Image 1 (cartoon, helix red, strand yellow):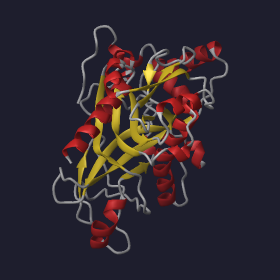
Image 2 (tube, helix red, strand yellow):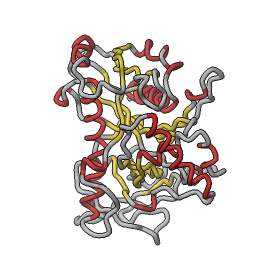
Image 3 (tube, one colour):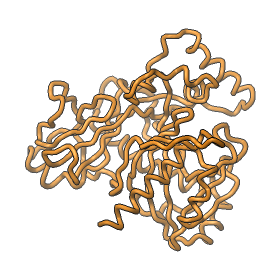
Length: 351
């Protein structure tokens, strides 16, 4: 699903890379990642994988009980999984001059803002859907996110490069098209207050990316939070994958708390509703939905004491109708967040 760019602001355009209108919770049981290189479609425990670019390998394996125990008892607990692997890292561009421009852009940015730091980020490398039944469009499924590593320096030098389009590869496959991009996976939260308002922030004019625009609370899940500084060559890969999967959910709660000031205890455990990509700068963001047991006036009071006040200047608590009026000043990836939220609402009405 894609939307055309506005004539006034092409930065509004987005593409939905994955929609999960039912809202998927975090996984509650241990995962068993392994490669199924010799099994291109069917998983060994009888579930069917619908491949989305890049070509996917299942990141779930049979638990000790075998096929039946997995499909009958554990399936409902396996919802959002992660395949974390260096194969999903960025591929350098063959044009040496274009690669060199990454350092040039970063050095220019440092001169303008010496406080910039090139932190490690998770890179979005695609996704796959795994179905419980024997079809490729069943009602019970889980999602496997494919993640590599990148950093903020490379993000500034590729995605935010004035010549960012030169890094793209002509392809219908999104993972191939963006293989030379940093593409760190951002996160965003649709936070609904107890009086059914949606929290929106206005970005500071100090930030590099879309200053002054309206956005949902969010940022990035952080590899450093779970002790990842690079790809490990040995150790418990299953445990590592599990930690990365949990960080996808812990990270969005952390961002909401830091950016709005609401306590974590006031938020429900988030559910994953999909990934949207802004067409300008091909910026990917995973979106989650959570409810807050504080009303909009209370949230506004807490915002004044928020830990992360640098990136935003004002908090709005708006109705769904008012949210539509803010779309003209929202980056495309966050416009995509609205589309994902609308899909979730529509699915809830039908159920």
